[in-house]
Length: 176
Image (tube, rainbow, N blue to C red):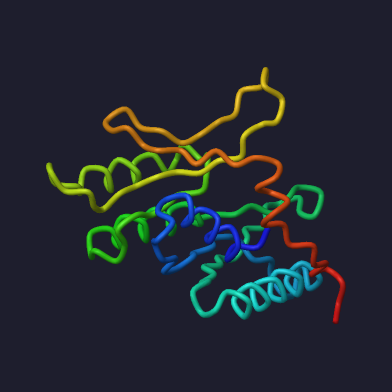
């Protein structure tokens, strides 16, 4: 998916007159020696998204962890959710955003969502925390979302049509 177009889609739903200030992408990056093809694909994707993102798309990449038994056992992202959570809360505390949409269903991020919700003072609208998730097109299938008990958090449910609108058809695995 194209993070800039996804950011535009969500910003338009928050406030049509609002401005998209930044899009942050958090992910693991393969090791250049262990997985040169994966490393090259991730690097090309990052470069393409940052170039097409008009200077507001920022990637935060942490090295993948290669467990014993790799490549039979899949490499793992480690520390990505922690970095995202720290940035989400510290940016709110500094007043870097009015509204931030956390696009994840990872329940490990609940404490960050709770912390940002707690930063809002009574009678103030900001910082505002919202979430986004893909809605399963089958009505009988549960779609997970990130939520907290302490506050009502708006969820931007995204559809198949939304996914198609922000899809990135590029094949970054093909070497250039």
